[in-house]
Length: 303
Image (tube, rainbow, N blue to C red; front, side, top):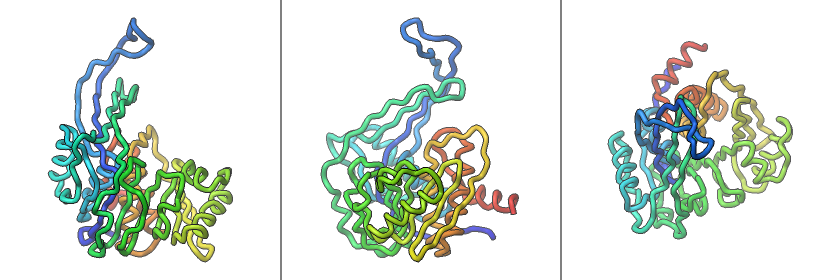
């Protein structure tokens, strides 16, 4: 199997942000406070949040159209330029005055993250693009980081796939696929997650209440569990990875899942491809992407 997603068109709606990295070294503790004194060696910025989903979709070969907002500031300019330079359609990203672009600044010392500084403001108005007819895409991803862009999931398109952050999953009602982690699953259902059976029970509750076709519970180092209508249950084992950095792994997973499902309509195969992509990306430092060549090579080596 040689995957090719170059014919897949994805609409990505979500909370776009930028991740700025300061990479340095430290050989002493500050005399002012018990923190390392970091000497920066390198700084760089990359898209985060929905921006990271877009970068992963593009790296895997898909055609990507983005809808969202950024602030009228230097970080918004930088984010839009980074996306545009990768061939991502940014015409649907609105620039809002007096609104800061969501920014996460991470400081690394001797290969480990030692601090993170966040700048953000929750948007309080519903962007106009959510009322448009969006049928010209194979899939629509809602990348919700709870920053205000995603007010509900009433999107008129074929396949809506949601990476949720809200406690109230009624906002995503009738989405085709939703991909909570275990913490999000427990918060949304109030069911204590203790084992695979409790995961299945919680997923089935969400399917019954909100008419999702599938709930894919992301279990981190333990893989994924897929639960669908008509008692469909599949457990996907995780890939063993040492020295993991899970930053943005969920973005990579939903990107791979969405285009694989749009291509194949096979939920189990799509989850396995997403699991593979996530296993590759957690071996990389910080917010990162996975290419289609990396996925294909991994599949070939592990047949």
